Length: 115
Length: 116
Image 1 (tube, chains in turn green, orange):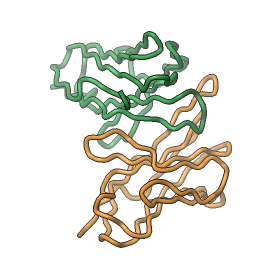
Image 2 (cartoon, rainbow over the protein chains, first blue to last red):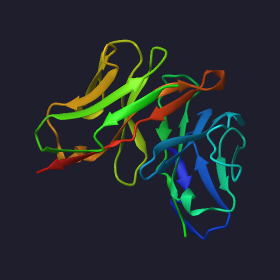
Image 3 (cartoon, rainbow over the protein chains, first blue to last red):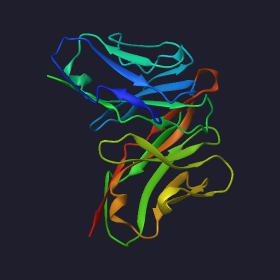
Protein backbone atom coordinates (compact mmCIF):
# COMPACT_ATOMS: atom_id res chain seq x y z
CA UNK A 1 0.00 0.00 0.00
CA UNK A 2 0.90 3.63 -0.23
CA UNK A 3 1.11 4.32 3.47
CA UNK A 4 1.73 2.72 6.84
CA UNK A 5 -1.11 0.39 7.66
CA UNK A 6 -2.11 -0.59 11.19
CA UNK A 7 -4.62 -3.17 12.31
CA UNK A 8 -6.97 -3.35 13.98
CA UNK A 9 -7.99 0.30 14.01
CA UNK A 10 -9.87 -0.28 17.26
CA UNK A 11 -9.50 -2.98 19.88
CA UNK A 12 -11.56 -3.43 23.00
CA UNK A 13 -10.34 -6.05 25.42
CA UNK A 14 -10.86 -7.17 28.97
CA UNK A 15 -8.27 -6.62 31.64
CA UNK A 16 -5.87 -9.54 31.79
CA UNK A 17 -6.21 -10.56 28.16
CA UNK A 18 -3.35 -10.49 25.65
CA UNK A 19 -3.53 -8.32 22.52
CA UNK A 20 -1.53 -8.12 19.31
CA UNK A 21 -1.24 -4.96 17.28
CA UNK A 22 0.03 -5.11 13.72
CA UNK A 23 1.95 -2.64 11.61
CA UNK A 24 2.68 -2.84 7.87
CA UNK A 25 5.29 -0.21 7.02
CA UNK A 26 5.84 1.41 3.66
CA UNK A 27 7.64 -0.93 1.30
CA UNK A 28 11.38 -0.31 1.35
CA UNK A 29 11.41 1.42 4.73
CA UNK A 30 14.04 -0.22 6.91
CA UNK A 31 13.33 1.70 10.10
CA UNK A 32 10.15 1.11 12.08
CA UNK A 33 8.98 2.78 15.28
CA UNK A 34 6.21 2.23 17.81
CA UNK A 35 4.83 5.15 19.82
CA UNK A 36 2.04 5.33 22.35
CA UNK A 37 -0.32 8.30 22.54
CA UNK A 38 -2.17 8.63 25.82
CA UNK A 39 -4.47 11.36 27.05
CA UNK A 40 -2.43 13.82 29.00
CA UNK A 41 0.81 11.98 28.26
CA UNK A 42 1.56 13.06 24.73
CA UNK A 43 3.51 10.76 22.45
CA UNK A 44 5.77 8.24 24.12
CA UNK A 45 8.49 6.31 22.29
CA UNK A 46 8.25 2.55 22.80
CA UNK A 47 10.67 0.74 20.50
CA UNK A 48 12.62 1.05 17.28
CA UNK A 49 13.54 -1.55 14.65
CA UNK A 50 16.27 -1.37 12.07
CA UNK A 51 15.56 -4.30 9.81
CA UNK A 52 14.50 -7.11 12.12
CA UNK A 53 16.66 -5.95 15.00
CA UNK A 54 15.55 -3.80 17.89
CA UNK A 55 18.66 -1.98 19.14
CA UNK A 56 16.72 -0.03 21.73
CA UNK A 57 13.89 -1.50 23.79
CA UNK A 58 14.25 0.91 26.66
CA UNK A 59 10.95 2.63 25.92
CA UNK A 60 8.82 -0.43 26.57
CA UNK A 61 6.92 0.38 29.79
CA UNK A 62 7.05 -3.09 31.31
CA UNK A 63 7.94 -6.69 30.57
CA UNK A 64 4.34 -7.25 29.53
CA UNK A 65 5.18 -5.42 26.32
CA UNK A 66 7.12 -7.04 23.51
CA UNK A 67 7.55 -6.48 19.80
CA UNK A 68 8.98 -8.27 16.86
CA UNK A 69 9.55 -7.63 13.20
CA UNK A 70 9.87 -10.27 10.54
CA UNK A 71 11.23 -10.14 7.02
CA UNK A 72 12.24 -6.55 7.55
CA UNK A 73 8.60 -5.64 7.09
CA UNK A 74 5.59 -6.38 9.29
CA UNK A 75 5.86 -5.69 13.00
CA UNK A 76 3.71 -6.93 15.86
CA UNK A 77 3.42 -5.26 19.25
CA UNK A 78 2.14 -7.66 21.89
CA UNK A 79 0.77 -6.65 25.27
CA UNK A 80 0.27 -9.48 27.73
CA UNK A 81 -2.13 -9.39 30.67
CA UNK A 82 -3.47 -6.00 29.65
CA UNK A 83 -4.17 -3.39 32.30
CA UNK A 84 -6.46 -0.38 32.15
CA UNK A 85 -3.48 1.95 32.03
CA UNK A 86 -2.52 0.33 28.71
CA UNK A 87 -5.50 2.06 27.10
CA UNK A 88 -4.10 4.42 24.48
CA UNK A 89 -3.57 4.90 20.77
CA UNK A 90 -0.61 2.90 19.54
CA UNK A 91 1.07 4.51 16.56
CA UNK A 92 3.50 2.90 14.17
CA UNK A 93 5.85 4.86 11.93
CA UNK A 94 8.42 3.96 9.33
CA UNK A 95 11.22 5.70 7.46
CA UNK A 96 13.81 4.89 4.84
CA UNK A 97 16.50 4.43 7.41
CA UNK A 98 18.13 5.69 10.52
CA UNK A 99 19.02 9.32 10.41
CA UNK A 100 18.35 12.24 12.67
CA UNK A 101 16.57 14.23 9.98
CA UNK A 102 14.56 11.38 8.52
CA UNK A 103 10.88 12.01 7.88
CA UNK A 104 8.67 9.54 9.68
CA UNK A 105 5.50 8.27 8.04
CA UNK A 106 2.84 7.43 10.60
CA UNK A 107 -0.07 5.03 10.46
CA UNK A 108 -3.52 5.98 11.73
CA UNK A 109 -2.97 4.02 14.91
CA UNK A 110 -4.76 1.36 16.91
CA UNK A 111 -7.08 2.63 19.61
CA UNK A 112 -6.80 0.14 22.47
CA UNK A 113 -9.41 0.17 25.20
CA UNK A 114 -8.94 -2.10 28.20
CA UNK A 115 -12.10 -2.56 30.23
CA UNK B 1 18.48 14.22 26.77
CA UNK B 2 16.48 16.45 24.51
CA UNK B 3 13.07 17.75 25.50
CA UNK B 4 10.31 19.87 24.02
CA UNK B 5 7.79 22.19 25.61
CA UNK B 6 4.74 23.44 23.78
CA UNK B 7 3.13 26.46 25.39
CA UNK B 8 -0.62 26.19 25.32
CA UNK B 9 -2.46 22.89 25.01
CA UNK B 10 -5.31 24.69 23.22
CA UNK B 11 -5.17 27.63 20.85
CA UNK B 12 -8.21 29.19 19.25
CA UNK B 13 -8.09 31.73 16.42
CA UNK B 14 -10.55 33.21 13.99
CA UNK B 15 -10.54 32.24 10.35
CA UNK B 16 -8.13 34.54 8.52
CA UNK B 17 -6.19 35.43 11.66
CA UNK B 18 -2.54 34.73 12.38
CA UNK B 19 -1.71 31.31 13.79
CA UNK B 20 1.15 31.13 16.28
CA UNK B 21 1.98 27.85 18.03
CA UNK B 22 4.88 28.00 20.43
CA UNK B 23 7.62 25.44 20.90
CA UNK B 24 10.75 25.58 23.02
CA UNK B 25 13.34 22.86 23.11
CA UNK B 26 16.35 21.83 25.11
CA UNK B 27 19.19 20.05 23.43
CA UNK B 28 22.81 19.47 24.25
CA UNK B 29 23.74 19.30 20.58
CA UNK B 30 22.59 21.16 17.47
CA UNK B 31 19.02 19.97 17.14
CA UNK B 32 16.92 18.63 14.37
CA UNK B 33 13.42 20.02 14.89
CA UNK B 34 10.09 19.02 13.42
CA UNK B 35 6.46 20.04 13.38
CA UNK B 36 3.90 17.29 12.79
CA UNK B 37 0.14 17.71 12.39
CA UNK B 38 -2.53 15.18 13.34
CA UNK B 39 -6.00 15.49 11.86
CA UNK B 40 -8.85 13.64 13.60
CA UNK B 41 -8.58 9.86 13.32
CA UNK B 42 -5.40 10.09 11.28
CA UNK B 43 -1.72 9.53 11.87
CA UNK B 44 0.80 12.31 12.17
CA UNK B 45 2.00 14.08 9.03
CA UNK B 46 5.20 16.06 8.72
CA UNK B 47 4.60 19.79 8.27
CA UNK B 48 8.20 20.93 8.18
CA UNK B 49 11.64 20.27 9.61
CA UNK B 50 14.75 22.20 10.54
CA UNK B 51 18.06 20.51 9.85
CA UNK B 52 20.61 23.35 10.30
CA UNK B 53 20.18 24.92 6.89
CA UNK B 54 18.03 28.07 6.67
CA UNK B 55 16.63 29.23 9.99
CA UNK B 56 13.27 30.04 8.43
CA UNK B 57 11.68 26.83 7.27
CA UNK B 58 8.67 26.69 4.99
CA UNK B 59 6.34 23.73 5.12
CA UNK B 60 3.14 22.51 3.61
CA UNK B 61 -0.23 24.28 3.76
CA UNK B 62 1.33 27.72 4.17
CA UNK B 63 2.98 27.01 7.51
CA UNK B 64 6.47 28.12 8.42
CA UNK B 65 8.70 28.03 11.47
CA UNK B 66 11.72 29.98 12.54
CA UNK B 67 14.62 28.44 14.43
CA UNK B 68 16.00 30.84 17.05
CA UNK B 69 19.00 29.38 18.80
CA UNK B 70 19.30 32.23 21.31
CA UNK B 71 15.73 31.64 22.44
CA UNK B 72 15.80 27.83 21.96
CA UNK B 73 12.53 28.23 20.10
CA UNK B 74 10.93 26.85 16.97
CA UNK B 75 7.53 28.51 16.80
CA UNK B 76 5.07 27.59 14.05
CA UNK B 77 3.18 30.32 12.21
CA UNK B 78 0.69 30.80 9.42
CA UNK B 79 -0.38 34.27 8.31
CA UNK B 80 -4.03 33.45 7.72
CA UNK B 81 -5.87 30.56 9.33
CA UNK B 82 -8.20 28.35 7.35
CA UNK B 83 -10.93 26.12 8.74
CA UNK B 84 -9.04 23.09 7.45
CA UNK B 85 -6.11 23.91 9.76
CA UNK B 86 -8.07 22.67 12.77
CA UNK B 87 -5.98 19.80 14.12
CA UNK B 88 -3.45 18.89 16.78
CA UNK B 89 0.10 20.06 16.24
CA UNK B 90 3.19 18.45 17.70
CA UNK B 91 6.66 19.88 17.95
CA UNK B 92 9.45 17.31 18.14
CA UNK B 93 13.21 17.16 18.50
CA UNK B 94 15.43 14.35 17.29
CA UNK B 95 17.26 12.44 19.95
CA UNK B 96 19.99 9.91 19.51
CA UNK B 97 19.37 6.22 19.61
CA UNK B 98 21.85 3.43 19.59
CA UNK B 99 23.69 3.28 16.26
CA UNK B 100 22.66 6.82 15.41
CA UNK B 101 19.04 6.16 14.70
CA UNK B 102 16.40 8.73 15.32
CA UNK B 103 14.08 8.89 18.29
CA UNK B 104 11.61 11.73 18.12
CA UNK B 105 10.86 13.39 21.43
CA UNK B 106 7.48 15.08 21.17
CA UNK B 107 5.91 17.96 22.96
CA UNK B 108 2.51 17.53 24.56
CA UNK B 109 0.73 18.86 21.52
CA UNK B 110 -1.39 21.95 20.85
CA UNK B 111 -4.96 21.60 19.69
CA UNK B 112 -5.78 24.35 17.21
CA UNK B 113 -9.40 25.43 16.82
CA UNK B 114 -10.50 27.77 14.05
CA UNK B 115 -13.55 29.94 14.67
CA UNK B 116 -15.64 30.99 11.66
